[in-house]
Length: 170
Image 1 (cartoon, rainbow, N blue to C red):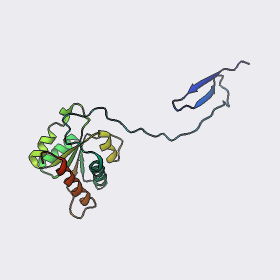
Image 2: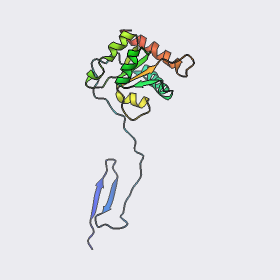
Image 3: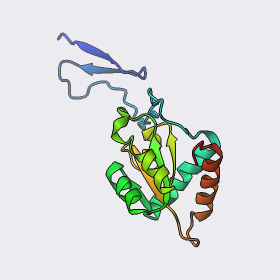
Image 4: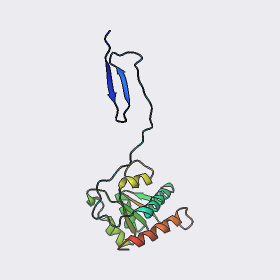
């Protein structure tokens, strides 16, 4: 009998021999690996994305978003955030800096300045999505101002103080 074997190389360097003859017990070396997702890298940052938060303030902001999402005190997406701003609800708007075209939510910073709402840009929409504990990227999220007895009120005050320090227009 003539047997033919096919060599398949995977990207991770594993080699698996599969029988082309349809043998019932092919010689396979299969090791199940947990698929680890690579963090998404944003290739574009808008020139309008100022102030852009980084480092310690970014970590606090993402922690604040995570706590606010768990308490259901957020507004996600452009239409929902625009509606909340126009109604006069107070909070902090976090905008993604890697959205193209910027026309999608270019009106939001102007509305925020008119209503006295703090806004700040985050480098990537994937970071905002991860902070909201979802795999879907989020372009805009508004964290509502918490009551005094809320679990995230101290974090909210720290982030507001940080935004006041880095924001040129507030």
